[in-house]
Image 1 (cartoon, rainbow, N blue to C red):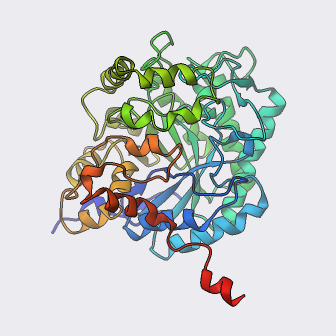
Image 2: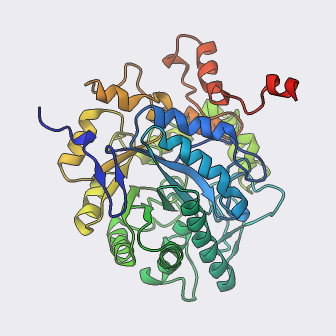
Length: 444
C-alpha cells in the first residue's frame, strides 16, 4: 500500500513528530488563579495524547501575569512553574506525543484582567474595538522587558524538557497588535513600515535564540490575512497575505523552524474559529465581560435582543463565507511557497481526505486541529482505522467557544450525545483523576 501522507513523520530542523496532525492551542480555565498548573490541565492534554495526535500545542501560556487573557490559565512567568510543565510533558511523552508550549501575551485583547492590573499593554492606547478592552501604549522599556519575558519563558520550557515553543503572533494578541497596519499607530521605531511593525516579534525571536540556542524548536503562529473589518466595518482591513509572506521570510532568516498559519486580527473572529455564532448560547456567559470592556454592556444587550442577535449572526456568517474545513489553505499555500521551513495550517479540519489533499497539493506540511478534537478526542485513531471522519463529527457550532468564559471547556452540542447527561459527563471527565484523594486524606 502507498504510504499515507497523514502518518508520514513530520521533520523539523530539531524535532520529529510521528504524524501530520497537531492539536492546536485550546484549553479552558483549568488552573489556579495565580497561574500555577493543576492535575486537571494534565488530564486535558492526556485526552489528545492518548487519542494519537503527533504533537500538542499548549493553550495560551502567558509569559507574565499582565499578559494573560483571564485568570485560571497556567503561566510560564517564573521558575517555580517549571516542575509543573516538566510533569505535564513527561505524561504526554508516554504516548509518543510531543509537547510544544505556546508563549503568549494578550496585550489589549483580554477577557478578564484579574486583580493584579486594570489595563492591558499594547502597541496602541486605543481600546480594542469589539469589546472595548482598554489598554496602555507600551513604552520602549516595557517592550524590552516583554522581550526578556519571552526569552525567559523559552528557557523555562527547555528546562522543563518540553519539545519546543510557539510564539502566538496571531488572532489579535500582542504580536498582532504590533504587526497589524490596522492596530499599530506608533510613530517610533516599532510602528509605521512593515519592518518596524515586525521589529518586536523579530527581537523576541533573536532573544529566544540567544537564550536557548538554535537547537531548540521554535515556531510562530501568525494570521496570514487579518480581515480586521470583518465585524467592525468602520475599521481598516489590516495586513494582507502579501504582508505576511514578507514577515515569515524575515522570521525564517531569524531562525524560526516552522510557520503555523491562522487568520483574523481578533479572537474570536468569523473566520477563526470558522463556524456558527451561537447567540442564544453566548448570552448565557457574555455577562462575564460586562465589567471588562466599555462595549460589554452594549454587546450583551444586543445579544439579549432577538433582532440584535440575528444581526450579529448574519454579520458573522457573511464575514466567514461558505468554506469551513481548510478555510486558510489558500493563504497557507502562498506562505509555503515563500519559505523552506515546514508550514502548519489550522482551520476546521476533521476529514482525512481533506488533510491528505492539502498536504499532497503542497498547501501545507501538516494541520492543527482544535474543536473537532474536542468533539472527538480519538479523531486520529479514526483515521488510523481507515475512516474518513468520525461518526458524530464536530458541527462547528462554537458552543464550546462561548461556554469557556464560565464553564469547563468541552463539546456543548447536545445532538452529538445520547442525552444531556451524557454530554455533561463527558465535559466533566477532565476532572478525573482528581488531584485530591479522600483515601489519602483519611490516611494522613
